[in-house]
Image 1: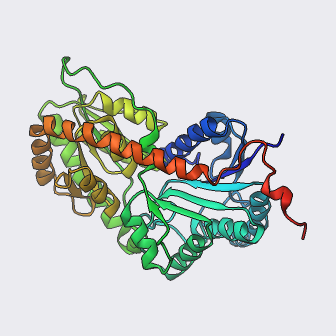
Image 2: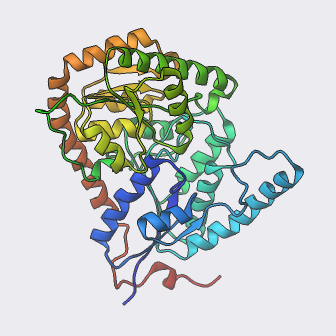
Image 3: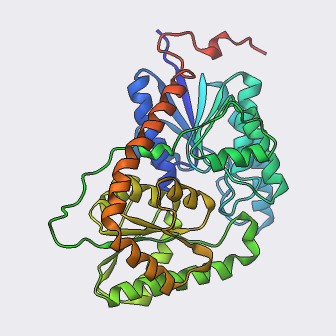
Length: 406
């Protein structure tokens, strides 16, 4: 009896808990729907993925200095050679599978800085290899956005066109891909895969007030705002520091949260600037850790998209410090569109006013979230049902066995 071979592709194990949360959601589904499947990953942090999630994993890039700034000729040569080697490595990896899945994440986004020869190029190679070698590549519940970078836009457009299956976590993402010239008439919109993860029990509402969870981010603008990155980073840090200091001065307990390893210097800077025993930082290595923190909180103020998703999922009233339209759309879809504040122009005084308004409306917000979360979870279930049609059944002849040897 043959076992279907499923490859998972993405920036997993690289320190971003949102990316890893999407991976976990899909792994949970695969283990239930195809328990005999052989699953492995091509990803950014293979050692972490294998240790945490128990699947074999390979390094995405051949050149180990891929994420370092190329300051020396040797680094430039290594990166250039790596791009050629990766084309063959990725094709060989794709060929070994019956289906390759890209689970969730903002894989088609440019809301944060990226270079065309990074993830856009790698995703294009995966989708092109899938088309050439007749291995279906499925983009499942992904996020997407427009970009002013022509190379990024071209690579994203071709990756999407070459994929055998596409679905999105919101209509904003599908609209962005359609605007790039991709026919999306058969593409469906479901919800973020993270809404399929288990939810921790809520905190004890009869006990003492919980903390205010403040999710911070190393925010320096989008891919099209590189020339303003330092300015935006300073303004964001100043605004969030003022906000946290004001909460501490009122005697509120504040828990600083992150969503990526790169965010930790931001928490350290805020802790040093505020210098109050009322402000502490939580060590969170997964979305499960984030949800446990948020489940016992009174209120959440979150910047990173998946911090916001976690707050909504556990039913805790949340205010979005929005750095991209996806956060605004998520909040509006839950009926909480007025509880958003721009990350690019933080006004600590205005943010405090919005925070107090949210707290006054806490009971109603909790009711809205209690009604909305089952709807989103149901959409993810329908996504997984649709995905099952692409997954080979255990015992079926794998597609790679039917291919002719070139």
